[in-house]
Image 1 (cartoon, rainbow, N blue to C red):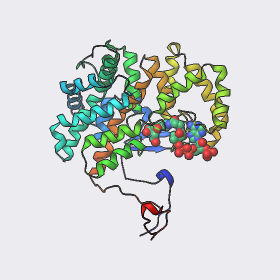
Image 2 (cartoon, protein in one colour):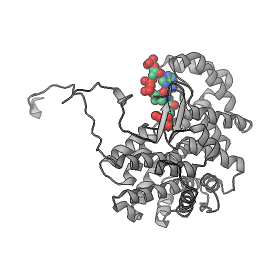
Image 3 (cartoon, rainbow, N blue to C red):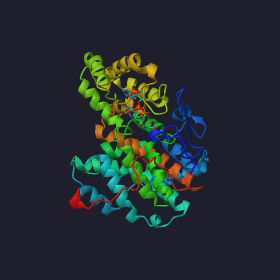
Image 4 (cartoon, rainbow, N blue to C red):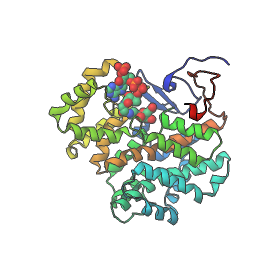
Length: 375
Ligand code: SDX
């Protein structure tokens, strides 16, 4: 068997070919379908980004209209699934609630038993439509609030905020949420996308592939970092404690959440856009000042090592300023990234090959079995 160089964590190892997303880690640039992320954030909507990723091209006006209407009509959940949400222990982490509900949803979807790509596309659409509802319903139920049914007259981002709060969001709040969803929609071969693709490559069902993505995203080294950043700010407590906190953390080789990236060795372009929103919302936020001080001090200490703020550093401040609970930050990441997971799965399945890497065996061979009473 041909020997390949071992790269721990598959660092820099291409696992697929794709036209979806390109990241220039040295320059800090991100492109969906060749278009810079700044253009998408400025001109598009999450609905259009999601459909573009699924189609691997910009949709026509008519295609987007049909997709948007299908999203709006697919938002609600089967009553039995809503009952399940009421039965979940209120202390369940919202990412665990999302993972469990998505698993259950498969039982109510006749497309789940079909294996053609059109069926998988329809499942992707339904999950994109339902993720915000799952997260909002669970949050309302755990807080002993009545659930707020989806409002088909509202856009994806608007409706999510509406179901969370029961109030129609302002145009600015909706814009901020929509851009945040655009920024998180895809990111090439990140851990959660890879997890979804591995499951899909065995020709397992789309629900199992998406559940794998949710599980991977939950970790604090990945999507869970945005929640960890706010906890870090609470631990720091005030601007005066920033230097001491960072020095102590770095001395203990502890990672500063929201910094560093496997690919970006420059400022994450998504963090740049989210920082602007955080600044605009800073009057509502007790965290913005601490965040800017953390960034300033970290840049002095580790920028030369290619460690910069990543997408998770400012997103939590923005969501917190919108009044969203901290443990919903990673579910918001999932609400967006489900489009990227599905898009990579559909693309890979066009020319599938089951993922089966190798491992470098470090043990001995031809050893004798020792009977248990002689050990
Ligand atoms: C996301 O992959 C994606 O695209 C992910 C994502 C997406 O959109 O899908 O962009 C979303 O997950 C963003 C990352 C969110 N995670 C965090 O903010 C957690 C903190 N970050 C680190 O855990 C880390 O930077 C990773 C996990 C993001 C990347 O880790 P790597 O590539 O494995 O880097 P490493 O751990 O090998 O670190 C290399 C060096 C080490 O120092 P040395 O041992 O070489 O001296 O850099 C240091 C690390 O100690 N380092 C940090 C650091 N990140 C790296 N030191 C302090 N704080 C940090 N955050």
